[in-house]
Structures are given as structure tokens and as C-alpha cells.
Amino acid sequence: MKAIEFLVELSNKYLTGEINGKEFADEFESYFYEVEETIYNYDKNIYNALDDIREAIAYYEPDVNIREESKDLIDDNGLNYKVKINLKKLKNPSIKTA
Image (cartoon, rainbow, N blue to C red; front, side, top):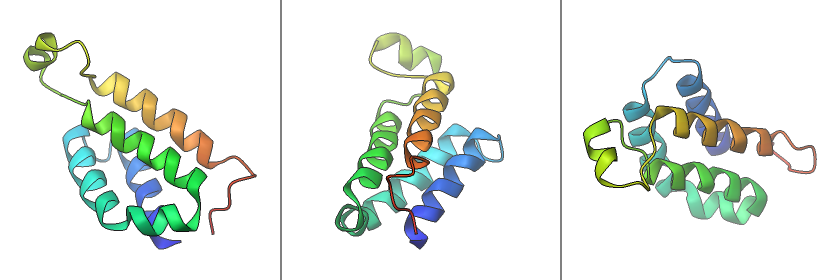
């Protein structure tokens, strides 16, 4: 499914440093909201992994001063970790990705 491929590719671009966290967060969240129902109807496990990334993005804050005000916010390391964990879930052979 093209939507899933796009989101995975976008995630990989973030992990490899091709785009920064802010760009990734903006693009991923915007696109995910457009296609989330389609992905949910296609495969709930894939949806859950991608939604976990979207949820991590909601807590992502690149500015250390703002993060200090709220302990719930995460930095690039936290976002990177959440993205890696959820991309690994997508590689599970029991999840269909085509």
C-alpha cells in the first residue's frame, strides 16, 4: 500500500538524517491524518505501529527550554527510539505490508 510505503520511507529518512525531526514530525503527522482510516481498514497491526509513531510525534519537542517545562515531552533521541521500535514491528512477518 502506497500510504504505508510513504510513511515508512519518511521514517527512514528521519532515522538516516535526510530530514530533521521537525520536518519529519510535520510531514508524518499531516499525511497520517489523511490516510489513517484507510490504513486502519487495511491492517490494524500496521495502523497501531504507525499510530504509535504519530503519538510519539505528539510528544516531540526539539526545544530543550520547552521540554524542561514538561517532563512528558521527548527530544530527538526519544523520537528516534520510538520510530525504530515501531518500524521493527512493521517488519514482523505476520503483518502484511503489500
